[in-house]
Image (cartoon, rainbow over all chains, first blue to last red; front, side):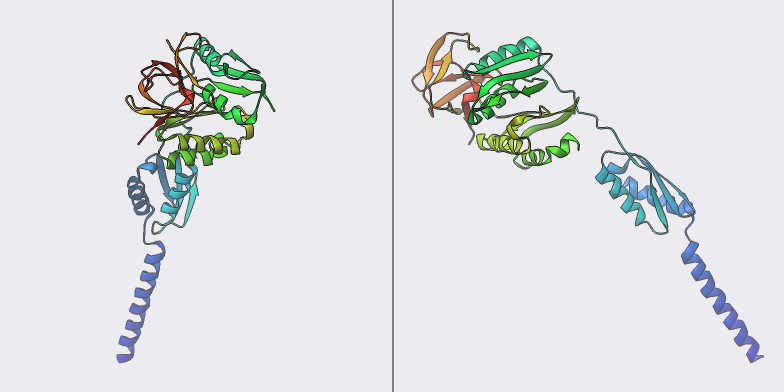
Length: 166
Length: 140
């Protein structure tokens, strides 16, 4: 009788250990893990464009973020979620949308400005075509910065510096 | 390597030196950096960094348009190479001369016509337009 009770106790104990072990291995369902991940992502506005799917504890991330840094950060955040066995990072980087397009001045305005700018630079010639300013001729190196600064204020599209530096 | 990476040091310098209204934009493989610098030293530093990354500005892949913010009523220093600065009747080198300001002289900034021309007044009372490149606003 006593022996039987002891055996029952051992069996129960073994069952308890087994269930705890099983729970810690597989206790969290994919859905629970996914909810946790979604919560973590929601807490960070930079990760708003990320979606997570969880199958067999493997989290697959998709969607877009603004740069590589956020992409890696998202992966490490998700890796840290309890129950996640592996992370597949399929997040892409969103193309950069400029706040507003660069404004290039019209050629006649640039030409007028260029005339004023090169006046004090004998030996320098400048032509303007389609927003591009092309500088030719000769200049001394110490004066080059001043000329470049001057031309840069005219809102050109591009400066082609073909000057020979003396 | 992207242009933002190539000019990373310049972008960082602009960010850390309190350039106001800073805009860094890339369009058709050219980087445009616009903003307003707190002082002439900051502007010069940015151009030094630009020159270091792209010696003699040969690549044609950056337009650095960061000028010293100019406050009307404030002072500006004449930073010609050594000569006097022409003061003209209107904003343009085709305009007649109405006066001159000496190298290193401090003049009063009345208004900013654009990034090329400032309306100024000298202590001698001469008033007219001068080329902005040769004026360095003195911000307290």
